Image (cartoon, rainbow, N blue to C red; front, side, top):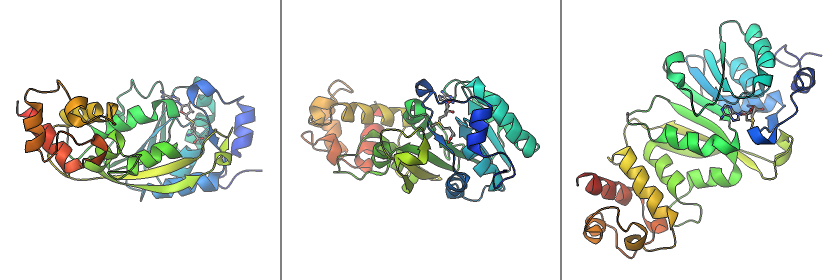
Length: 280
Ligand code: SAM
């Protein structure tokens, strides 16, 4: 029997195309099309947007994005075994799905997309954080994307939305709040996936800010924050040692005590420090 979108159910797609999940590619598939449509709806109104999807796999979320009206989906998938299944989806939605086989870390999707652009993905866990940091630190404002709707392990999702002073607060929370409004949109138990991962997951929705909350050079901010949290238990005068001459004066001028630890320092102070360091 056909699924709600008229295509075969995902279990059938997986068995027809022999898509046994590969751990090395972080494959935990979503097979419930009601759930993938719900995730697609979190991404906002897609009818006027191109959507970039990383790791479509057998196409569950891809089908959700298309049935929710995405103008076009560009899907980048590393596993060539998934391409025939995705070709069936493309044939069902003529002219609206483009699939590129390859590694999302190596491909520049922009030449295939027309703004406005949203990004939605059930990310492979091994590359998810790296892609997120890239999307959060491009040189331009606003970024090329309007929103990110991304599945992460619950613990990573909590790090993205964390507030200063909490255990989860760190590099991801700072970069996310500098560039976007971030919230956890959906929480999912392991059983929502096939095969179930060991941990719970959550969909995080980030809406791009038109301007930075506080000015700073993205690369300098990223470097300062990465160094500060690399040794999060240390006082900042030790954790950031060597990052710039006269460090203690720079910290004080940025509203930070040299004895503060990174986890208690807010975005405004980190941006002030990044500006101070960039000024030389
Ligand atoms: N979107 C599908 C779903 O929700 O059922 C699959 C999600 S699965 C967690 C992650 C997908 O990303 C897999 O299909 C995997 O092959 C693909 N993948 C893994 N590493 C990748 C990479 N570097 N670039 C592109 N796709 C990748």
